[in-house]
Length: 159
Image (cartoon, rainbow, N blue to C red; front, side):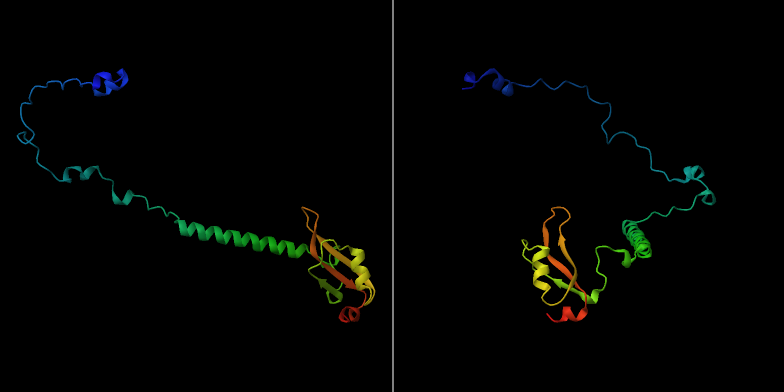
């Protein structure tokens, strides 16, 4: 049956080379004389003096490194917050309102609504000083809410 196989498969069934002959060893492993085990006393003078040994170095563990980095990040954030608070002046914010007590927040506005439509609807209650319709910075689409600042606080409460 193997006579019909192609040569590449016949090579898989070919006999291996015989194991080479080695002459027997003089003595077997258990017959050989072994040296007796000794202690380390003869090597003690090779060790360094304990007085000359440097102190062990302290290595930071993974949890300690994590905690240190968390504290550093918190300090950086606190420092940046202090700097921003020192530089912040609410009176110079052009996008902000002048008086928050005169400002009305309107939410769930249709995305097709414009400032003129909002002004027309809310001027019924009193004179409107400013309308801020918020837009997305990336897509420039409306966000769906607005801030309406009235001239007088009583006008805002009439709604």
